Amino acid sequence: MKDYRPDDFDFNQTLGEITQGIKKPNILICGATGAGKSSVVNYVFGEDVAKIGHGIPVTRGITKFQQENIGVVLYDTEGYEIGTEKVSNYKLNVETWVNEFRENESDKHQTMKTANDNSDLSNQIHEVWYCISAANKRVTDMDIDVIRMLNRKKLPLAVVLTQIDNVDAEELQAMEEAIRNNCQVEFFRTSVSDDEVVISALNDYLQWDELIKWAIDHLDESLREGFISALKGNLAAKKRLINHKIIPLYTSGAAGVALTPIPFSDAALLVPIQIKMSLHIMKTYGLDQKLGNLSSLVGSVVVSESGRLLAQTLSANLFKLIPGVGTAIGTTVNTAVASSFTAAMGYAISEICFRCATAVFEEGKEIEWNDYFNGENIGKLMTEWFRVARRG
Image 1 (tube, rainbow, N blue to C red):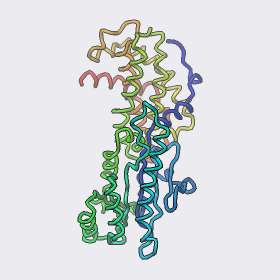
Image 2: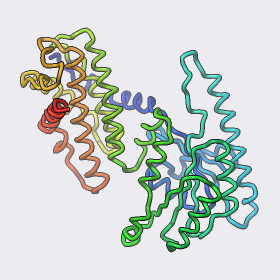
Image 3: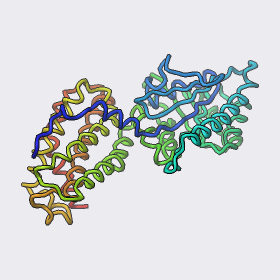
């Protein structure tokens, strides 16, 4: 196989291309002052999403939070304090802004639209999360009015009941009944208490996972990658996205390279695709923010190992485990070989990244990256993929 060095690849440029290719959903966060909006955002997406100083005021009472490396755009309403004159203005401010947002973004879209662009979704508010603090022990008329107004605009809307550790079961039930009877929207119970005893007692009540599932389900398919990649945790959702969408994207690219069977000696043509796939996987798990020397790691794992592993795979006849591939192997790499090998590589990288992310983000461990990213681990996982593919 021809040599392919890590220095031949622009890692930063490729990460930038991956980032630019991810469509970001626009999420409007509403609720009264003290309703726990920031706590909800920080719990779901992490504190980096709405860092102080990164917000851009877009109009009176609305602040936009957007960062290049984070896959969602948040619009945060200023809120209002019960019993002040801001209450009467809140609904008008939100409604006016939603109308203007749709009009302004639609105008921009029409100006930039090309003959081949008929599916842009950037001119929409894709979801609304309306936060109500259970600590207030009631749903206000203003809450109901704003929720009904947003519903009339056909916006996917979820009510997030925050701070439920501040109410008893009867009080919580009364608030839920008020939402159910007056708003006819889905609602989800949450708390971000630091007290482990409290969280344990609330275990049967908390619905963070249900909220996130609702959010994913109500997004257009093209927007889900941005949302899922922006999540603070939810590694299982990220793994499903990678295995069902991201890896198949690159296996198709590898098959395209080999539409005209390429000599085995030219199989290095697949390496850039596999590197980009690996970077995409790492970014989705959030590991690109953790790796101090990403180019060195990916270079040693993918560039150095890809040719050796392909040679081993061929010599071990592992491709014969896949129906329709076994008789195709000779001195060339065809579409079946290229796509299968790339899929196996993607599975291996995804599984290793999943293990790393679990250790780093969920268990708080300091790990040695080389203990995870090495040829032995990748080889074992690729062999496992081939055997599973055979059984399937």
